[in-house]
Image (cartoon, rainbow, N blue to C red; front, side):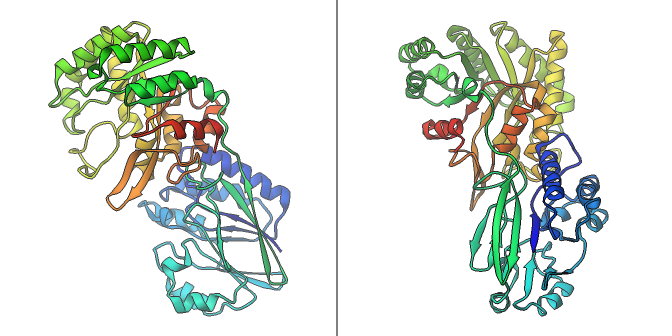
Length: 471
């Protein structure tokens, strides 16, 4: 018996994403391999959107294979979930080749009554499927009962693991597959033995990225290292105008002699409660060092206050841009929700693609052309709940990709206090952001080929090497 297992794709209504490319690839491979059944372990949508659920169902509806589909917790995040769930759940049991396959609904973080009763029927010829890790939803005595089953297969943790008969399958989502590329999982079952094969849907490998990859320099020493290493792009921090001037200028000169091509400056805040003199100093400094580009945050203003003050904020930024070198690229950077923010008018402006694009358009209206674009901070887009559930990283890429001026790349870590940004890249495959989606969009023309800075607080060198090597 051969089974195709899918999990954790996180589709939205937007179809020009790497998630839909992964769905198409998986459906093609299933059609080619002709398994005995297709299993879905849930979270096939990012937030239970009906259009996403329809796309998932359509991908498999025409395939002539038995199906066992289960929902996941993400599929319940929307008010539309009641309409989406019938497309994401199909069947409770299958009988194939002398084995019985049962699907347990753990989407609410516990088993429903029907699944509890179904669980009681499991025996040594039963394969069990659910979304959550068994330890999260089953009492110890029930897990012990499942120990005699050939396999207990689950998703949710986005990576492959195997402990005894418990098997977690990797995510199909190119932005969230951990420990390796997004994959379709194949189970082969016979004589009580279960073999697992994970088939990558696509891998990391942005074309010619070494010409664009760079680092965010938090000190002059990093600029010196960038020159010796041959790093093509560097971005200086907002406080760099205050660094000791002579060593910094010498380091920049050496970096350029060694082949450095693109120098960017991260500009200070502007808007509510900011210092206009700091902006003036940074503008002068940008001219002194001969920047090729700059990044500004979205204005420091609340969402509710923005409409009444957007003209003044626009004019303030436009005045600063007008004093920059004429050929300097200008990016408006997205920010993210933090512990002080709540979904509503009091949170800061600029947490969604449409907000960043709208402000960029406001500024451009004064210049009669596309003087500004977007600096996409991928980590900010990921660390942005509740918005990251509705507008995940995969949606940001096509939403702003043609307007990109620069990128900020880093990892996000989950701590007791919540998510924290600007962490080193332990791998291009996570643990919270997989850069396979970035790579796929880069290679398929969805993302513009622009300087990509590893914005790491601390030593950026290992992260830079991992990013270039695809490790």
